[in-house]
Length: 352
Ligand code: SF4
Image (cartoon, rainbow, N blue to C red; front, side):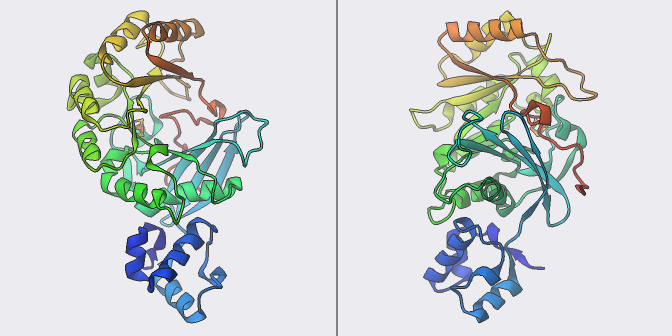
C-alpha cells in the first residue's frame, strides 16, 4: 500500500527524497501550488516522478459534499481513502460582501473519525469511535479548504482543532499536524493562529503544554458544577472542573493571548444568572475569554435553545465582571455547523 506523502514533515521528507532542494520543491508543490498528482511536477525528471508515484499518494481526502450557509460558512464532508468520512467547516470571519479570497477564514478541522468522549449534546459522541486521523489527514483538510476557497498560498487562515473527535486523544498525530501546518515552506500558518480545543483531558493538557508547540488553548467547559458537567461530558468524572482548571492555569500561553472557554448554553441546564456568577468565580485569575455558544437543536436532541433574554443577561453579567465574552450565534446553524454539532449524519458511508 502506498504511503501518504502528507504524513511527512519537511524533515521526514528530506529523508525520503534527496537532495534537499528536491524535497523542498516537492513540499512546496503540495502545499503552495496545491499539486495533486506527480505528473504535474514537471520540474522533476520523469524517473523521479515515477518512483514517487510508486511509493506515495498525495491524495488524503476528497470533497464528497459541500453545504453553504447564508452567513458564508461552508461545511465540507470529506471522504478518506478508506471510505470513512469526516467534516470540516470554513467559517467566514468577515461580512458576507467582502471579497471572499481576501476575507478572514477559520478552518475547523476534525482529528478523529467519531469520538470516544461521548458528550451528551453531540452527534459524534452518540456514534462512537472509528479511528484516529493521521497527521496528513488533518493537514489535508486545511489544504483542501484553502484550495477550494481559491485562497492564495500566501493567505493565512486560522485553524481550530474542534471538528469531529477529541484532539488530545490523538495527541501525537496532532503534534505532527501542527508542525506540518506551521512549516514555512508549506502552509506557513503560525502556531499562534492554531487553537486546540479540548473537552478537558487534564493530564494531556499538561502534556500539550510540555510539547511547547505555541498553540492556543480552548476548553469546552459547558458547566460550572461537577454534577452538571458529569452529565454533559462524562470524562468530568475522571478529571473534574477543579483538576481541569489546575492544568489550564499551568498551560504556557503567550501573555498577549487568552484561554478560550467554550460554554454551550442549554435552556434550563446552565443558562441562569447564578451559573454566570459561578463561572466568574471559577475563572478568577485566569487570562480567559468566554465564548457563549447558543445550542442549535437537532432532530432527536434532548436539549433546547435558551431564550434570547437569558443569553443577553448571561453575557451582561460576565462583561460586567470584566471578563471578555462573546456570543456565538451559531455560524452555519442551518447547516448544523455549530460547535459539537458539526457531525454529518452519516459517518461510514458518504456516497452522494
Ligand atoms: S463535543 Fe467533541 S469531545 Fe464531545 S463527543 Fe463531540 S466530538 Fe467528542
